[in-house]
Image (cartoon, rainbow, N blue to C red; front, side, top):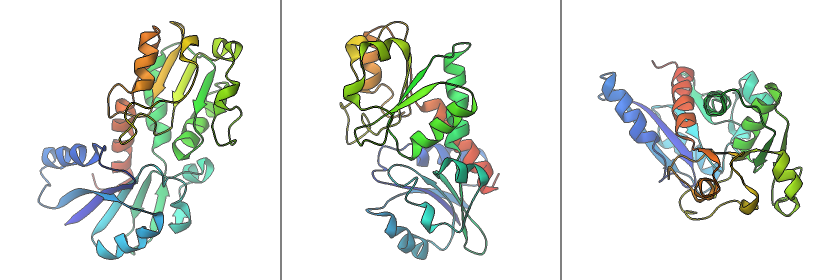
Length: 245
């Protein structure tokens, strides 16, 4: 049986197994394909996973391993190499691992549908692997943006988000895990009192459907969008990468 799966920590919130199981049923291949969730304490546990799953054919990668997995791969697609993050791994017949990034396309499709003809300046919250795909798409499509982080790796810290910046940057994108299990009820510490009806809040998280970040935006009259459409688009792109249609 061909095995596909998701690695990350945590993975219990993910709907990937449910999504692909429905897909396998629709394509009448449940007897030959399965999708499993693999929670890894560290990315170093990947070697043991590969040894224990000789029928593994592909992996999706979620927080916090989208950048950490790269040294374990044999090669990268040009797009993954440019972005510096991987969320999809194809296991070749000879066992070699090839990294791809389907977050880029999934995010771009979803954001374009959400914004329509609008093209506001953006604040990208977080600087991890998902953020890198978001930043690459924004740059490629001529969006002005700044990154915001606690770590000092962003253009700004959360404490530097002034009224002027919040007025000027109307698109706010959450790429952090705040709001996802086990961090339900948490949200990035932006000044929500400065969010208005002119703002667009986009959260990469899709479970729960309405995070605290989006809820606070809704309370201020902002347009909001969760990551469900992005999830579906990147999942379908991953399946094409695996070449197992």
